[in-house]
Length: 111
Length: 115
Image 1 (cartoon, each protein chain N blue to C red):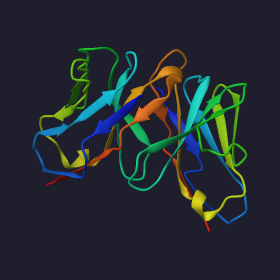
Image 2: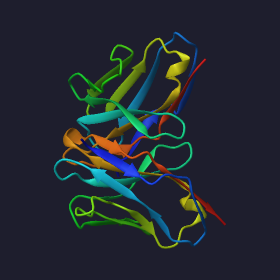
Image 3: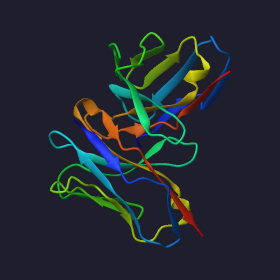
Image 4: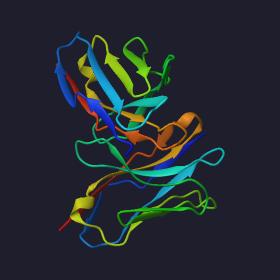
């Protein structure tokens, strides 16, 4: 079946540290992959996406590369800020436009 | 672009009453919208897929008679929680795909508290 697995949180980092949040998936076919971010009390915002193997999605300093050989889509940022504190969700799309979400990873960045 | 709104943003109601939540795509048309619920510190659980002009498709375990979905236009879907009970208290989030894309854009969510 289709599933998404993320590294467990919470992840606590100091400002300007390097961030990696691991995401792996299982899927039939060739899904699109997404990272969404949820700030406290809000809905989800699309952070970045990739639609095919070797594509790199990027936005606001965050990057993720669609790795078909390792079925991964790890999220990275070179220097995090306090304002990046949020919950990050990895997701894949399946037929019919449905999204399968990972369990979410809470990131807390300390000054 | 690709903005989705929800109304209300929060609602408190008494047990046994019904609550309607609206989801609107503000700058695009969406033949398909999705309804999720989210419990504190958990991921989103897909409840149903709302299709414009036809019946919604519910996920396994979601009571269609309790969570009524209407998608009357290409920019509006509504979720009505009927005879709400405290266990229905949750954060309800909708999303929509611009037609022809696989990217979902999410509303800001509606927090429902049933007393």
